[in-house]
Figure 1 (cartoon, rainbow, N blue to C red):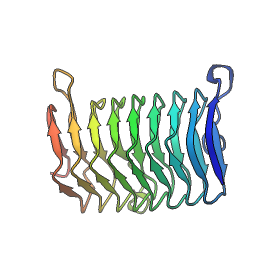
Figure 2 (cartoon, rainbow, N blue to C red; figure 1 turned 90 degrees about the vertical axis):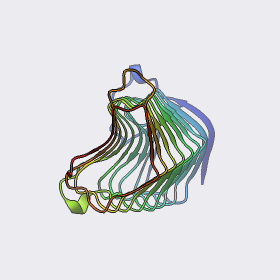
Figure 3 (tube, one colour; figure 1 turned 180 degrees about the vertical axis):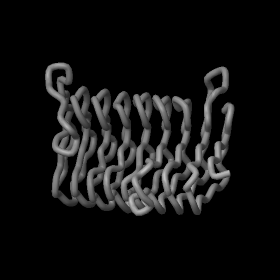
Figure 4 (cartoon, rainbow, N blue to C red; figure 1 turned 60 degrees about the vertical axis):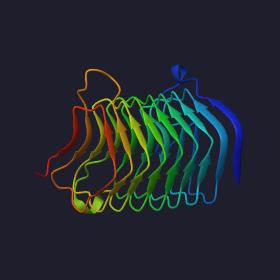
Length: 229
């Protein structure tokens, strides 16, 4: 099934807020093999595009802008999502991996001016590849690996590769909780604002088996704040 070539305006100021677990400007539940392309979701009082318990969903060349909550919401238990060449701007969070989103690919997306995080990944979201994205001007953190209640719920075995993370609010990449077996490879964490007062990479006290390869930092007050030390 395909959803394509649409512009959907949620008329946010005139509608009540709807939680993205139950609704969205585009909302899918218990579906498989859905292809979403060239769809613009904007001004919705909730999530732009949300899918829950949906496998093999592809979202390509979509615009999710100025929504109250999440630009793209990879919902509970969704396997093998493919997210490419989308523009996510002005949402609370650009790209949100929810609960048990696994074996996904998010690449070549532009994620900018989101009020809290560019990308958030956490609750049992494992074995995903996040690469070649431009993540710019996030309000708080460019990419956050969320702090979860215990080790079993943390976002393990994820790859963050070849991303540009530019002018994040406070931290470029923040790895929290008991997260393990994450690889950061060839990412550029860049700060162009003056004076330099921000952190490129923050590593939580309980993070283990972290692999760092050829990441580049520019213009930051602190390149790596390793709380394990």
